Image (cartoon, rainbow, N blue to C red):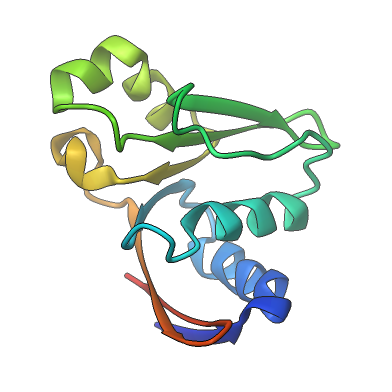
Length: 136
């Protein structure tokens, strides 16, 4: 499914993504640097009721947020990792198989860790303040 949106309507796109995901909670976020992966995860967290500060996990590798209902949401950034071994050492597998929402930026750095039913989102810049999200 393709979703084209303006950045000021990103929460509507986030709501669509949550609806498309349904019971699937592992979301691999693909896209070039600056495409808006972290911004989209932030919007999804807002939609899911996260009250914590949402930020890029580039240096921490894994951020955990809590929803108002007490559920966890994991936000991972694998950009700085060199393969599956480093991802495993960082605890990525525990997050992916936690049964909680898990959004992973730069999943191509550890592709074999993702289950076959993971959702893959491809985010790209299509114009000033406009993005295209392909969900598969």
